[in-house]
Amino acid sequence: MRAAFDSFGRLDRRERRAVAADEALRGLQRAAGALPSLLAYGSGRSYGDSCHNDAGALVEMRTKNAILHFDPASGILEAEAGASLHEILVHTAPYGYFLPVTPGTRFVTLGGAIANDVHGKNHHARGTFGCHVESFRLLRSDGVIRDCSAGENPDLFAATIGGMGLTGLMLSARLRLMRVGSLDIDERITPFSSLDAYFDLAGEADAQNEYAVAWVDQLAVANRGVLITGNHAANGNFRTGGPAARLGVPFDLPFSLLNRLSLKLFNNAYFHAKKRKDAPHRSGYGAFFYPLDGIGDWNRLYGPAGLHQHQSVIPFEAARVTIPAMLDASRRAGHASFLTVLKRFGAVPSPGLLSFPRPGYTLTMDFPNRGATTRALLETLDRMTVAAGGRVNPYKDGRMSASTFRAGFPDWHRLESIRDTAFCSDFWRRTALAGPAGDGVPKETMRTP
Ligand SMILES: Cc1cc2nc3c(=O)[nH]c(=O)nc-3n(C[C@H](O)[C@H](O)[C@H](O)COP(=O)(O)OP(=O)(O)OC[C@H]3O[C@@H](n4cnc5c(N)ncnc54)[C@H](O)[C@@H]3O)c2cc1C
Image (cartoon, rainbow, N blue to C red; front, side, top):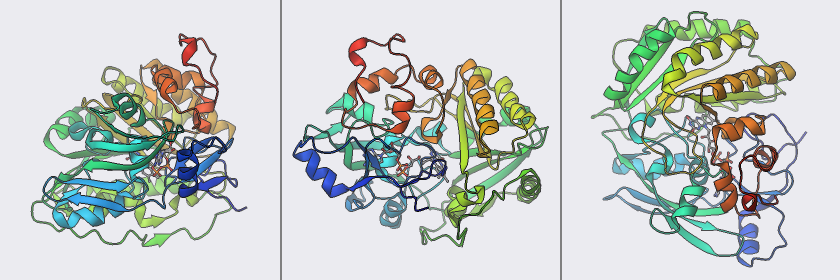
């Protein structure tokens, strides 16, 4: 099957309709009305259907990737929205700069990073990606390009950051980069033997370090793991290297290689390898920030049925009870998570209307898709998240219910009221627009998709 414009979870592979960026731009600028419902598509590194629009067409934004301007004195970069984070790094690292916030892959686009208001291992220190966006240019279906910033069109600025592409097409953006001592990281690994031990360490680790994240052995009943902390080294280098993966999964596997046994072996080996490195040491920035970028198409390891990622954020007051219970629920369901990551979100407010991060702990688990049993587990995890006052990440999701989404994001109807009705996604139809109208939502804010 030729599947194009997949999302990273590869859950629903099919041929998708897409229009070239220039065609969409011309159509929108003429306010022609002849275009189908649209949605920007960056690099498709979202996991589910928030980057899909099967009832309409995707707009291929990756081709619009020019770096327009960089001022080494202020660290402000202006680029087209399809530029990847890697391309931005290559351009700016030689001047002593790094991304102030980076997700775990550098293959995402500037537009995608803003539209999902992504977070990194330093949320406690720098907040989300959107906190560092000075402004962007947004084309809406009335044909007008609007400059948006905290001072100009502030409502559109807030709705577009974390707005999942629903407010129009971002053409370009200005981003404030962070001056660093080098790209290299002085890293420290602290093993822990239980989640309580991790929770005892996490606050102080955030206070002392730019970056902090924990890997958890989800298969071990005691929830052992390692806390990985780091800071930019003062005397390292600024070489960005090539983005090419050193290893790759060259073809679609007929079944998932990731089963309970292989994961048990992997987790054991990983835990002990990391534990041995508990003395402070130097790590290259690629290994520290983007370890999975080194293995091309690693999502193919999950086989033809794809993978589900479940990312939740649980408020501090509930985390010590709810997070161990979620890991326990996954084990009891017989599901092994390939990668289980725990991170403390800080209190830096997101500028976005519907951004995912909020203060608390965020738990991320990757499950091979085994159909109904996996979905049943994910629904259990959803219920536990909502009961704890938390929320489930929309851009990692391809199946949460309308009520789970609405419970986590009670302001969803404010985004709906400013959404450009010429833009929609499968995710939005499935959640915001599919739930019962009424639901405390003012009638006039309900629109037709
Ligand atoms: C290995 C891996 C690690 C990851 N780690 C993290 C992490 O640590 N933290 C985190 O937050 N996320 C993480 N992610 C998720 C990823 O960072 C986000 O999903 C990101 O937003 C994807 O960007 P993209 O360019 O691929 O956009 P796509 O997935 O193609 O699209 C994402 C959204 O952006 C919108 N969009 C894209 N371009 C534009 C535009 N020009 N104008 C308007 N809207 C636009 C789309 O409509 C869609 O709603 C990870 C993903 C992977 C695969």
